[in-house]
Image (cartoon, rainbow, N blue to C red):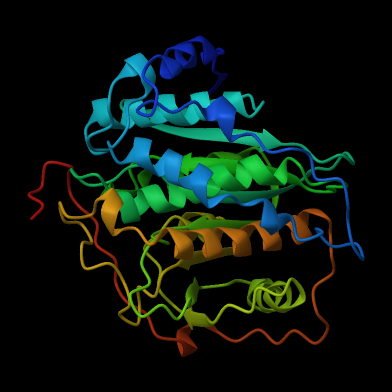
Length: 340
């Protein structure tokens, strides 16, 4: 498997300002450093999550705005569409000061990664990931929503002071074909002996028709169910949770390698999910940005506290996943399958 550093390509973004109002410059998405902490927690780092910044990324990933002179991402199912997506993600990460890595595991199959190293040297990692591909459509909810959420987490968490655990941000290729990219990456990280203390997968976080703000928490391993509940309360987010046993997303790849994992999504299992799932109607206009912002704040708050090593609550009781409802997700034999 190949791991290599990508060259700086920020010069391409100089072209983005040539067409005011139509092109987007990730360098404009930076946040000022967060200076304070409170009681050893992440000082409400999630308040740094910006809806407007996420919207700008979503516009590009759904073909509503160009990547400067590099073109427009009309879909993320062809090799060309996915390559453009990787170009945008790497440029956006470089604008934030990261050194993106490409993990090529087969022809036309490459994941993107970026590492946020702890201020206190550590061999531990938290993984925050989402799949970058879609079927042959704009894939706004599935899964530009998750990709944007991880990109926003990368923008915000780097401003958190006192981090004691490294964070690996990852965008997985070929999820729609059966978790191909995440399986390759999880296997390689296991072979490298990487100490992954938790993996947080975001898959479809852009639909909330009943406006109840409920976040589906699927297959939370180990302490993660209790930890999400603790942070949800201690940070004053107070979002309703729906625990499920739904798999068939990239967290399963890490779970199978023995890494504690969880998936965050809209209410896929219990029905409050986009009606445009794997359809051509999965466009920018259908994404509920306020809900996506709330879900991203939750993930940032949890990963922030984990990176500071805020202890979990006492008396954790692990309940088997099998005691919760599940709903099958769809995979495809190829990106060429017909999508309505």
